[in-house]
Length: 424
Image (tube, rainbow, N blue to C red; front, side):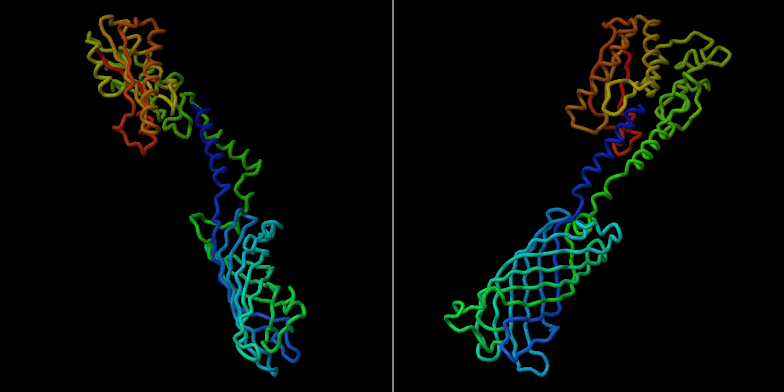
């Protein structure tokens, strides 16, 4: 029983560890807003402010694992002139597909903080620059672009993080300057600025994490899901201590409600000494365990009684049963004395036959439990045959699941895993 419980607990721990490997959310929605800076091309005499408030972007991000992912984002805004310089206003937008690297996990930020992160992103896309003033007002200048940037993160909770991003955008095939006052002459560079139109953005925003897990890939730390060697040794030691059986009755101490039963005592699944006939004499000291009698006669009745009637009564009241561990057809040690009692009774009463009924709890498929219940009944049948009982006096049958007990209760399920007897 100890080995079974120890194995079950250790397998459960390994299963939890395996499932934890994918225990994080992968989707997020990133919303940001802030400043932009148009660097070049700018018509001589025109200048843009160092920090122009006029940019926003929104993206949908998917992380393949805790280190790498991808996102699609849409950015838009407008460029304006610096104070004291000629006026201009230019709208723009861009759409990009980008790869994302969780630099915080790659560089092990968790060694100094589990709430500070850093993402790197790089990608390409297309966009449009549309001056609203000057010579090229309303001209729609379609461009392609490359974007790269860094995003600092501060974890605010399991569902949201604060972001601060700095990105640079390099555009190609741009024809007009950001101020709309000039353009590349037709024929020079094929009428386009090359891939050298440069602008910057600096934003603050939020990431909203989607999914059913408690953490997102941005903050998932794989090593936290595994116990260290010393932690495993301590846990196994605690389990072994818990499974000690101080009184040797087959019931571990943590389940034993009577941890000092004498050696050889017949006990129930909670380690309590049984007095099957209720005469005040425990079964291990009672020569007639299922027939009440005084202590002066070692628990046996003084007057001759029909032992068959008491045996039937003991069966009807559920005193004579053989119990099994989960998914096992081997009788538990504390209940094997029931087989000895039935064997002795049959030897003293050659005219009596018995039927053995096997049962299982409600955990598992019905057809499997039917076969398991039959194996349990067959195991008791084999023990009685080995004890010298003629096979013509014994029959056995599996009855499958015992649905009369509460399958939510571990104690009730233990009572369901049994083989009982019926006098014929």
